[in-house]
Picture (cartoon, helix red, strand yellow):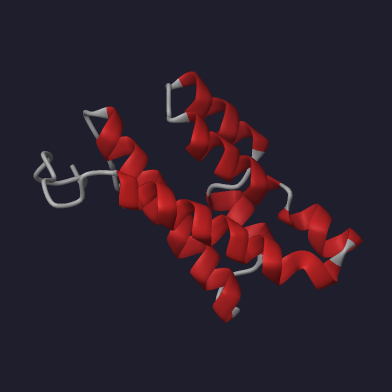
Length: 111
């Protein structure tokens, strides 16, 4: 299976990435995904660089960067892990709220 997801506007790309961040953090909180899984999907320095090169909003790049730090937090200060996950979730929701969610200009993301 080859699933392609594409966006044609910066706002739509930002929205999709934020939705992924929200989904990953909720999955982490619920224990249905571990940190390694989130790194494989989104929270990696490689992805952060690629998204930055693509011109993704700097606030979203910062959120991805915080996601990249979760493994270190888990190993060095595990008592702060839940707080860090909550911070990422809160930031992503705040960024998403700033986008015009009422009017979505792209019909579909899945090609």
